[in-house]
Length: 302
Image (cartoon, rainbow, N blue to C red; front, side, top):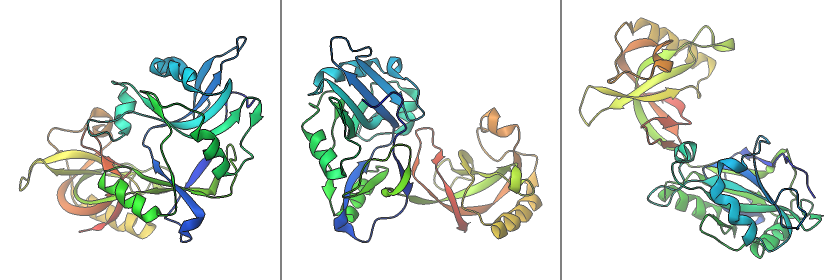
């Protein structure tokens, strides 16, 4: 049986494949990648264990998952999936699982071992077929469906439901532990929005002479000049833009914080504030429950 811990297979970030019918598509769930080990034999040393993507034993952190072992139709199984927490609309939200204020759900999308036989050498279609009859759905776990082809349609459906995106997995390929391969591709929905630049954090390394991240805000209400802090934007800049923006930001430097209320201390202690005269269009995955941009990337000044 595959030994604990397992280094899970990883996906590359990309766009939808051109040869659509050679790929399977699954919804990309926004949570914690988790490996589940089940051993229902009488002398099994560990009846049920959960392992994080970094190889840590997190079983005790999620006691609501303990009964999953009874729903598995085999004595020994290793599953791969995502732990998520759903919001009131039934959509997974990363900040909710970080707080873990409500029970998690485990969405299983692969099987690595069944009753003494490793299944990682089987192709995707065979593993999914085995998985379909292996796990009985419960209140805290399920095997979400997948589709062959139709990636653009599924991606659009996830965008309309404000989900993170889709996973594209090449048909006829095996599971390769610990490897990031083009055979698994994560395709994310991105939101474009305009923000006001109110400051910047210091840069380090090769960006020591410029800045680390733009500190951005949005009006507290439409038409208001009062800005609510909305987080940082640290990617999307080429060297020319970094130098140009740095020059503009330094010319606008001020002692006054433009955000109301001020950002958390971890932000303010190293921040340089600027007059809120510059606006930028950014691309991001979502707004967090705290009103911050998530995984934001700079596009251009507006």
